[in-house]
Image (cartoon, rainbow, N blue to C red; front, top):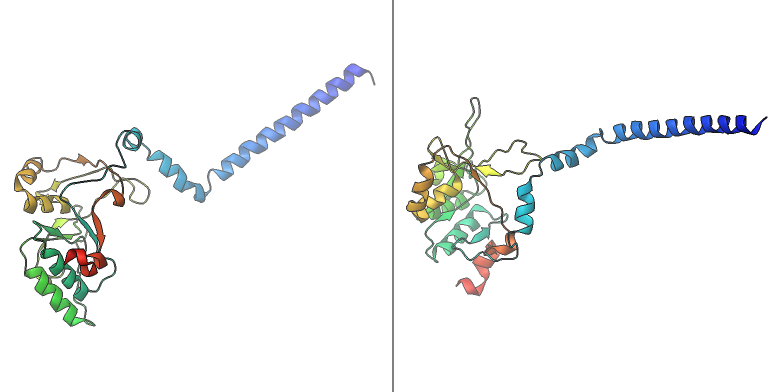
Length: 231
């Protein structure tokens, strides 16, 4: 065959091969990126905002918080142990103590622990217990049992656009005149601060994330119970 015909035939073959290659790549990419395993990454990137860059690069994440808040991890302590922990914390005469936990019902297997916890909770006037609120029709609330003698009046739940994948970027300090858990703590710590927030009932506030647990004054429950520094 003449050389120019050979070149034309090879060119057609190259074109068809490239067409199949690019078509295959396109189909493969559609299959891969529609698999459920990639949905987590897709939703995570969709949740990204420019404030993330600000908080990551502008704020000093190595700075240590020097405010009046101390965090105590209650771990998996029994209610009797929590009673001892609370009594130990109260020896330091804090303005307010918040238990970010629900005591939904009495523990029939450990009535003495329940009794001890009730005595500790009712023995002080600076305790704040939260509850799971329902601001939607048909929802159900969850509160600590009345047995423990401390009313649960501040809501602890914060709902994002997608609670599984989205970062909660704002909350309502007061909603329908009901304080959030942090607002209830402020009410006992400094009513002047909480009063300013209460005037803006129903207005959302941005959460400005800062550092991690190492940036804050934090202890385990065993630290408080057994470390000689707390004697």
